[in-house]
Amino acid sequence: MTNSQLALYILQSLNMALGAQMQGETSYTNSFDVKVSNEGFYFIPRLPAGYIIDDDLYQKIFLIANASLYPRFTLLKQPSAYFVPLDTDDIHIQRALFFPWKIGISERLVIPDLEAFSTSKSSTIIPIMKNLTVDYEKVTSIAIAGNSGSGKSYALTYFLTMLKPISDLILIDPKFDTPSRWAKQNGIRVIHPEMNRSKSDFVSQINEALSDSLNLIHKRQAILFENPNHKFTHLTIVMDEVLAISEGVNKAIKEAFFSLLAQIALIGRATKLHLLLVSQRFDYNSIPVSVREQLNVLIQIGNINSKTVQFLFPDLNPEGIVMPIGKGTGLIQIIDNEHPYQVLPLLIPTYYTKKGIL
Image 1 (cartoon, rainbow, N blue to C red):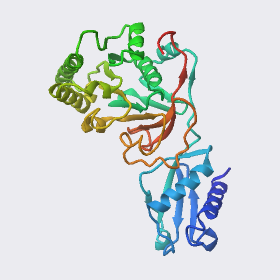
Image 2 (cartoon, rainbow, N blue to C red; image 1 turned 90 degrees about the vertical axis):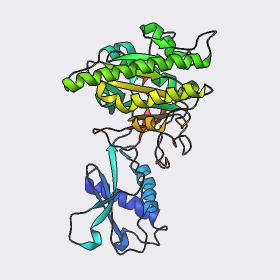
Image 3 (cartoon, rainbow, N blue to C red; image 1 turned 120 degrees about the horizontal axis):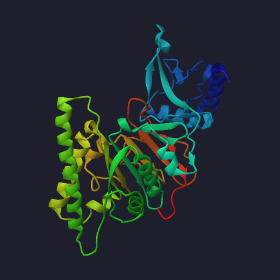
Image 4 (cartoon, rainbow, N blue to C red; image 1 turned 180 degrees about the vertical axis):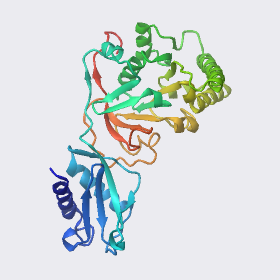
């Protein structure tokens, strides 16, 4: 299908669906036009117009076009109307609403042997889906959110296995569950609750590990000051069920936990220290706002609606996003200089791993 044929198809879809909402103004009355580029399509209104060009119109066009273009293209959801100027002297058509897209749809990776797959990777590139990867060199921190039974532990096991060859790991597991079993199989240090130890004692243990990590950051900063090109080994602090760590502990210990977490999140990236946080939700009770603002790989798994996405994606209205069906599905946003900032549908890789971990 050529660009002109695609533009005509989009135009017909909009004419049929928008006509009643725009007081009968269509492309047949010369009220608007559509142009297609490699990056997306432009809705070009001819002004003055008898309809209002606002966020409401933009979202309606998104709903119509995203369904019409599926599965050839996935429109990238915008928080508000995306205006662009056009290169023309005609004041009537000097602006357009732009709808960026990516070719195709999200497709799940299937990995027959996860351990062999992870060790075969020599770079810091982590595959997420068939057409999506993330470079760990550009990651500050990762967050995985989802309600109980949504597949958070399954996703976490995938990331742990992929990170093991490229990063040192410290695991914190308040449930003493899947991550602890994975750590035992792989000889990784894990901090977990123990019998005859109080909750505050457990969080104090975590604070000691975070304090040691913060001291390591300061040592590495001194090395970087003398040699800015020095290469460090990545260190990732992994916390499962963050909300369970901070709930119901002594106020002073909780404040110390939040303070250490915030400092590591804010200054850790240059010295190759990262956080991988997993929680049912990331509200102000689970992590400080300053930590949430430093997260640049955001994953929401399971039920997707305006309530579940409000903490990781506060500006997102998920209406109109074509969600994949099945387990381990959700949304992902990677904030770096390589990926579009928009949220994409996600399918966590299907993999097979050692017996007794999951």
